[in-house]
Amino acid sequence: MMFDINKKKLKEAFSKIKEELDEHREAINSNTNELQQTQEFLDKLDEKIDKLQEKIETLKLSIHEKEEESYSVTSLTFREKEVFLVLYESEEMLTYEEIAKKLGLTKELVASYVTNLVIKGVPVIKKYSDSIIYVILDSKFKASQAKRNIIPLV
Image (cartoon, rainbow, N blue to C red):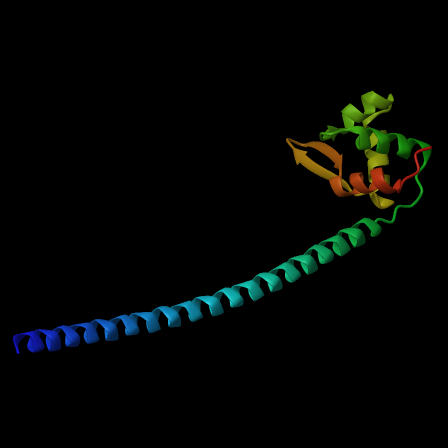
């Protein structure tokens, strides 16, 4: 009889353990399904992000090409080309005096030629410091000039 009572208690204990394990198994299966769904969702998001990135790159290239195409420069005189060439070859900002010394011209003539360049569509950047004017070519224009020879120098 004692054996039957212990057997019955043991059976009940195992039954409870089985129920708990079944509940844990169901919870694990449920979590696994959620994780799989989440992973599938993340994979779809990654695909969409990749497509968006491709579209963004295409737009950037399109914008860059349009920026390059937008330069319209009227033909330059010989002296204007000389001033342009000094600016084109320079990696840093120059004063009118520095350009004048390189070309054997006066500061006033260089100022006039730089003004003509701007009027004719050459994007020259001017900065003022202590009443001294510094000039440099726009870097994007410089890159376009290197690629497309916007201003024929020969």
